[in-house]
Amino acid sequence: MAQMTIAEVATHGFLVDGKWVEDGDVIDIKAPYDGAIVGRVFQGRRSHAEAAIAAAVKAFGTTRRLPAFERQRVLRRVAEGIAKRKEEFSRTLCQEAGKPIKAARTEVERAIFTFSVAAEESTRIYGEYLPLDWQEYTAGRWGIVKRFPIGPIAGITPFNFPLNLVAHKVAPAIAAGCPMVLKPAPQTPLSSLLMAEVVQQAGWPDGALNVIPLSNDDAALLVTDDRLKMISFTGSAAVGWQIKKNSGKKKVILELGGNAGVIIHNDADIEYAAERCVAGGFGYAGQTCISVQRILVQQSVYGKFTDMFLAGVKNLQIGDPLDESTDVGPLIRESDAQRAVDWVQEAVRGGARVLCGGNRKGSIVEPTVLTGTKPEMKVNCQEVFGPVVTVEPYAEFHEALRQINSSAFGLQAGLFTRDAKLMFQAFEELEVGGLLAGDVPTFRIDHMPYGGVKDSGIGREGLRYAIEEMTEPKLMVMNLR
Image (cartoon, rainbow, N blue to C red):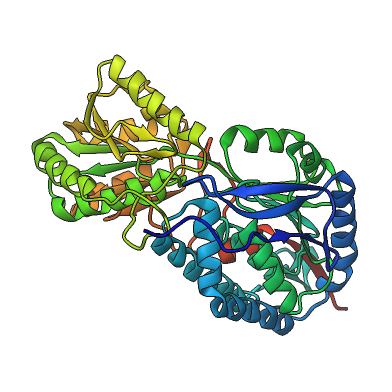
């Protein structure tokens, strides 16, 4: 069996103003699977954050004036640089995040795609011509609208996609001409530091990307400092909304949590729906904000679906993320695994039944399916962020829509039906940022608009949409007499 260790444990500095800094406390990065140390990083201090912000402000004088072809060239070189080191990135990601190696390779491919699409979009930041002669006294006037980079940006990223969610901050910022100060997740900084190395080698100006591990206290400067004009945060709802409260005048984009629901109607392809729900509910041990958490099945096909779904869940391979056959690995911390099992046991005490799983060994939680749950149970109304799924029957379609909407979250939802009328009814009525008709809510391709409503956040990612968020429209009115 593969071992969650590496031959030599390297210590990594952080990038500030084009220089790799080795200063501050040294932090061990441990594999979630077995606790082995897979790397060490220097954690910056407030003074380093100050220097990073100053560097980004200075670099904006350069990046704001870079022509599109130069920004495109940098982005293409980044994509090529990651591709050349694909296996290095994959193994680093697998080791620090505990993500199964085959899923880690997929994430690396997605990051390459993210930078490639950003390269294309960097040349498509269009403006607008406005005729203004709509009244007699405005005759002879017209206007042009051009988008300008908003300025230096703070990016804060989570552990669960330590490469591609970093790419979703960095790539559109480069495309828009905005410098960035990035704080990676404390559990998974190695992938972002590798990416910073590639971006630097691609020719992005010194100070235009600063990547620095920070404590939460020292990272607070990124939220409060007015020299940063925008903050893009991906993480928990509690932290995200507190950031918005403390951010002052800066623009805030929040991509937060969810407890995604999927509806299986009686006319659906049940076998395909079950297959997709297995993948959507247990990929990366459920540690994605659009992981399938609540499945609602029309009662006439509930038994058939549940049997197929459970058969698929029981075929999942649990184990070492570096093993090529592993489907489900560890949760990021043992405390998260304990919390997930506690919520399952709490649901059982409230009358729920465990159809499979429900146990843990260290940081690994067995893929778990519950039924007989109530909407107010934590496994339904909060974000589990683990391999736990509930399956419940419904009678009428409007009941299923109501149950999906009963959540405080609203990121994405899935719907399996062949009835176009029901699809459009769901599209009109569901309070989510995206509806996946014919698929699970876990689906995402990186150029589509992505974000939520309610407690799931504000603003949108997805390259073109993120570039719009990172730029401001400016109007010039022409009165040629």
